[in-house]
Image (cartoon, rainbow over all chains, first blue to last red; front, top):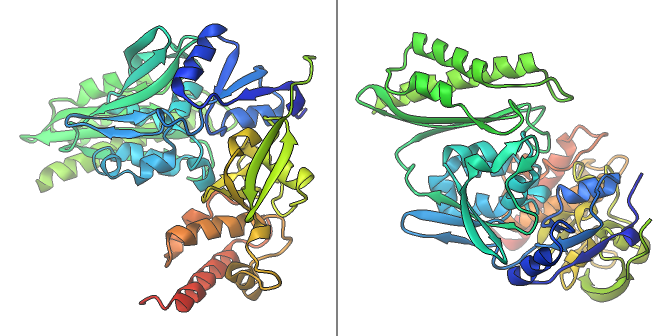
Length: 292
Length: 167
């Protein structure tokens, strides 16, 4: 049953300070809405429990990307289009730029925000594996002040997070130290645009002296939260890439994920595909290493 | 049920004219355009941002108007399909869709033409891949897309010829 707009309140205080004051007055009563690509879908379907919403769209404090010497700070209100079009993001954080290109179609990329994708906390979100491998840090803000949190700690379970009822994500910080890494990402879905992933992966690796000196692999839609494949990373790290290692890595990956059957795919398919993606990443990384 | 909330006054520029409407702030921009302003070009297909039939430009940016609460359109400049033609003179894109057979039942066409307008505003001489990506958020259930992509390429070529762009 479609929602009746007469039942809903929406305010746009126009500044970050005013929004966090509103949240602090009655924690949990106001639902933040940025570009509406998630909230408006639930609203249209009549499944949005909140009746009072506060708009974050285009708040200048949230819609900026600051490039520092050693890090970039991405405002939580930046859209996927903002990410795609940013030169430093495209050059130094290609996994994030490619995830932005795969999320929704152009109109949704123009409205959907990185902060919204994080707070919405879908296990299938395309941008979140990239944040895991870049070891993103979140800056949360409330009237109580700011706190910093590693993104990897933020998602505590299926659609649950450590965000307090009076808090917003202000920005996402990425250290600028991945320039020498090979990157790999794939989205496996019915189609790239619009369709939600059956499996997605983001990975980084660096070969030195013939062995994998460092690597990071994260995947979406294979567990209740987007997850880093730590056991797979341990199996690979410090070794030369050959067929035996790829096969051990594939087994480790399939062993550590917890995929389910749902409307988009099956657990068995997700396991098989994730194993293949890990193998494809490692074989490509090995080939990159030989060409150096 | 909770008591009805207050309506608010929303002003924006629609297709070059400043309009003011009374609406609930969570009313969808699509409904305000269609029901209050009589601009029925933008269509409701899926109502959840998947099909692109309700696409309009908001401050020059392509958006799905079914996902925009009207309060967020306050003070913006909106262009709908009705804003493209100049009087009885069709826009290049509209003419190209007619010439190439890019419209069949017509439900998706206004949204596709707005997505194409957004693409051509940013990429004047698009490659076929650019056209596919630019229209990737718009679903058509009739044509199979080939004539649609041809129409966009044709409009781009005509606009390019009018401007006298180098090949």
